[in-house]
Image (cartoon, rainbow, N blue to C red):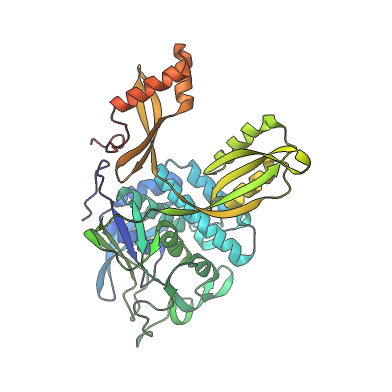
Length: 435
């Protein structure tokens, strides 16, 4: 059973995913629930995105002689329409989810959309997810992200991925296995057709329904997107003090191997490497936009999902003063933000460069000052406060109501946060943790 950590526990918790026999969204979800994450945590998160749309149940089964947990997501209706990436993104943004769950789910679906767009040669905003857009896959992604959050996981890594082979029938007709989206999502990962050590299919192996020859489909786009988005590295199981394990079952029970995904939770023997997130910087030089429009441009880009947006004064050809607009975008938001730059400015071109960002964990703490709550932004790592900064807009509004200079108000709020334990070097305790 999972020893769920308290919010003020500064021990790093690592999740290792064994996808060497394949991976699908329901298999990974089953493994996390089997490791001790309450099924109700998953249900609540999925309900926030798709109220009344699915039923989620779990049962113990056997796969290749192993006990495993199979989580089933049953749609409330048989009609499952295709959904565009923008529709799924809007559902996730509107849902009442913890920030970490929403961010992970957006990142997973963003990778799926980018892979589908490249595989089928369409603009990412026009991608329709077909099978991936059905409620059960939305439930798998949101459920896994909620389970990872509930388990207190801070870092993730995973094994090589078994992809399978053969031919499968899909929404686009017959496709080779691995499918084009799965191959796109596997870029940079160690992957192969066969499970385990790479043995040939055993005697009596039956192909799955809809699959002709070989191993069949061992990894789905949803499963591969979850692994390659959430994990920081492809590696054998790292040295750790194991605290929980789980085994999630696939739907099929082939005679060749156990059709399962396993997870291991534990405390790393050594501090994990910094999490470096791939990002893209979009840039455009603009010299003919009314300067009064720039604040609204930056605000719109941040609202549209940019991790950051800023202006750099420059001199263009012929000595003309201008600004370089810079937008920091995740892979899942890049295409939408590029379109937004064209929409909001007068530029005729956008440059792109790939960067890597290391980000602290972030949270808000409401500090009560003179009877009013004021937000303080906390940057934390390994359960310790690294940065603590009062939110300027909150402080400015608090100062106006009291007729105080903003600088004085900043000092008052900073002192109140310090007295409340929100200070650099102190243990980070999330609100409501009781720690």
